Length: 435
Ligand SMILES: NC(=O)C1=CN([C@@H]2O[C@H](COP(=O)(O)OP(=O)(O)OC[C@H]3O[C@@H](n4cnc5c(N)ncnc54)[C@H](O)[C@@H]3O)[C@@H](O)[C@H]2O)C=CC1
Ligand SMILES: N[C@@H](CC=O)C(=O)O
Ligand code: NA
Image (cartoon, rainbow, N blue to C red; front, side):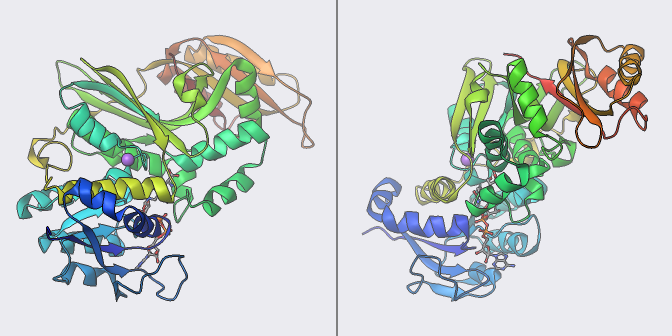
């Protein structure tokens, strides 16, 4: 019998418990595919006595996850604790330095420290793998590194956060309140420990920066992602979008802008209006979808569960199986030293149609102030929609759809209106994506 691959699991929450259940349920199948058994030897979490619905009595227990990296009966450390720094990073560094391969689901840690960890893994000759960190159960990292390896990729974009997609599509279907849907996403195990990371777009930005590094061979640049979340999106925006033939989706968009003076990387996460007949418009619930455009393959669409215990565990165990088969390729598809430090492309010169929602007092002159700001900034208006009566505070929602034009002009119009007494809240701008 071939020697088993011995693994230690740090973190036994949604993902960690899913991994135990998957490895136990599919042990024989996994052993055949991995060409050797996968054996859990030790586990660690905060609370030993908690009932997780899985039997942990066969595995050694460590109160401190860092102890796992020092054990002789561990070949691979699997980090499912979370957090960009703290115990997760300490464990990752110690494991790699000690010659153990690392599998992690932690996009925050990879977005902040992935290059350092990948470099260390190259030096010690171990594997660093993080398929679960981007789009949960969808094999998008493997797909980009292996399946799309022959292509120059110019653009990669999609729905990268299951919690936000669950919130937006539930609000759309049921008219439910933002806070109630978020609480349900937390109960189902989709949300981050701090759900601000989900709703403010930070989690999607972590994933987008990782994806961009792999797709373009770029030096990972999380700080370069322009990030806006969904916390300002109101039920009225979703209704309005629907009336116009769109749905609202939080998208991550990453594009390599070719320029003889030096290519630049555009990275942005924000809510967009997506036409109802676009493939991303039908992506509902915690489902994620990633579109990659390559010069020979054309447009590739990956779609599947982006969050939750089973799908995420599936991605974690796929990485473990790859390691069992001897796969140790560079974490970001090429050695860290070869990744390109592209400059940051700004969004200002990008051309799009925009939806701009204002909350205004119900009095004469307000519309004139707004349209004057648009005129002065060079924004051409396609339609103005005021729906319904003023609410109990005497406020009215006013939505403007612009013609196609440079985004910098919309930004300038918002600057002119900043602090105006014709607005009672900051406006919300959402770009409208094309086909
Ligand atoms: N829940 C999901 O659908 C997905 C989660 N992820 C990532 O997987 C990782 C884990 O996520 P979840 O399982 O959802 O989190 P969770 O909160 O359900 O579980 C975290 C586990 O880590 C342990 N832990 C936390 N702090 C610790 C500490 N200081 N020392 C020892 N143990 C500690 C907890 O006891 C718990 O067992 C995170 O990096 C998350 O971003 C990735 C993809 C999907
Ligand atoms: N909180 C994340 C979990 C998976 O990455 C999400 O909602 O997508
Ligand atoms: Na994935």
